[in-house]
Image 1 (cartoon, rainbow, N blue to C red):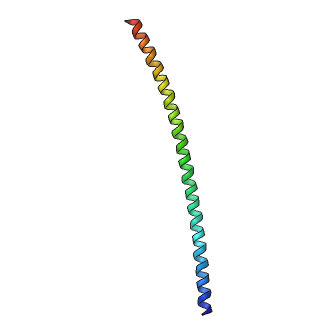
Image 2 (cartoon, one colour; image 1 turned 30 degrees about the vertical axis):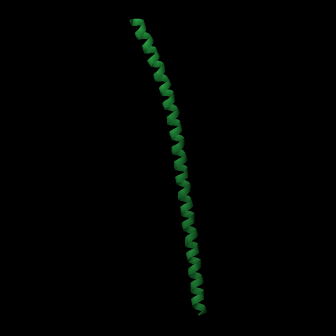
Image 3 (cartoon, rainbow, N blue to C red; image 1 turned 60 degrees about the vertical axis):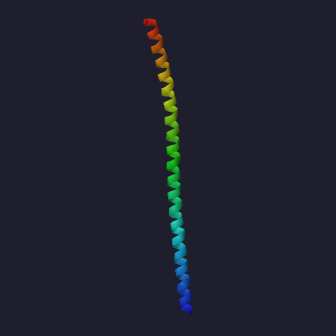
Length: 73
């Protein structure tokens, strides 16, 4: 009977240790995924800012083109 209890306790300890190990691995994965998401968000913000800059430049060039077209006509 005592041997069974000891075996059950050892099994429970092993299961607990495995659960902690899995939890640590999952925490690491979550941290990695969070870092990737944050990086993607930053890249998206940079891309959006660049798109806005390019749109401003396009608008400027279109204005210049219109002015030149008016001058030619």
